Length: 387
Ligand SMILES: Cc1ncc(COP(=O)(O)O)c(C=O)c1O
Image (cartoon, rainbow, N blue to C red; front, side):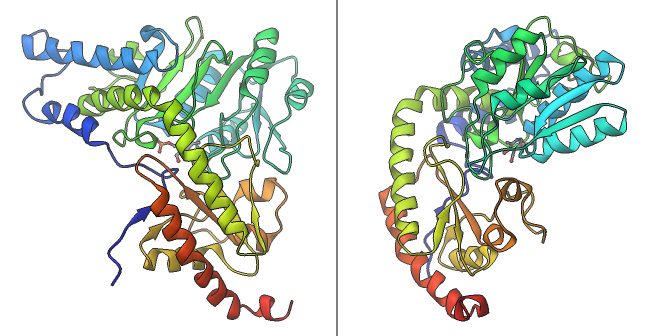
């Protein structure tokens, strides 16, 4: 029985790094004070929370008073879009893309029910949004543009800087879901002309259930929840202290290692893509160059991605078919449909997402185990036999 685990699903979540865990651990036990308390244990924890906020803000080139801690990427997206719409107080127009994560798309659907109009921009075959299409979609009452920094399924990077610049020129807020990018590639909110940005700690070797929303000073927003005055009333509730501390440490580490990690992962990614394409009748999904350093998304012709996935799992290889959130559904992923894949090519897709800890041996192992799996599944496939 194979006991090896090759984890290649970092797009879904990542393990907490030992350094991060060690840093967090005291805040689960002896350093349990409530940061809102006035006594010494409380004040000490407050200081640690503010240091973590500073580390998180520094990683984005932001000021710490522009950084709000949330419960993760989903909550950051909800607070950003719903909060800005709520403050506006009357229906208006929103621009987003057809390949956003559901944490943006489903919020936009809800906002439509409340009377807002939403333009879901199409993407090209690589999954790129055209900035000119954003420009053309602008209307008199467009109040926010939300375009993700990189797609979680196919890894395509968006021209965020250009879109941000044109939003700035029109006085329209620009939000980007940067959950897949922070800690992988350099992010500077000023260079990117971003007004609101969502991130999540569990995608960068930090803990689950914690994230942040960057919000440029002056952005007008209403809170979605009422309660205490934590996070300057934007996100009330007693702080997830261990999570916040872990997030600060994880981001600090991840960002300091980007140059080395990017190079290493891009090399491993390209080796894996080349090896998988060599199997034959395998196509790459997403952009060949403008993609996340660790993202490999391929379609195996004639077979189901889910079947490949289960066979890989039996060999100790953890990957995913499409996005973890949409797997389990029979509909092809909205992202793969949006880049124009036909039903069967979309269903043959598998995502390998590399991260901290993956190495050359992992790539060797996947490239040794995958071809026979594909061959076996194809030998049972009626469409392969009748081709
Ligand atoms: C692009 C993107 N946005 C948002 C999320 C949701 O983040 P969280 O799991 O922290 O709520 C994810 C997670 O899969 C994601 O990939």
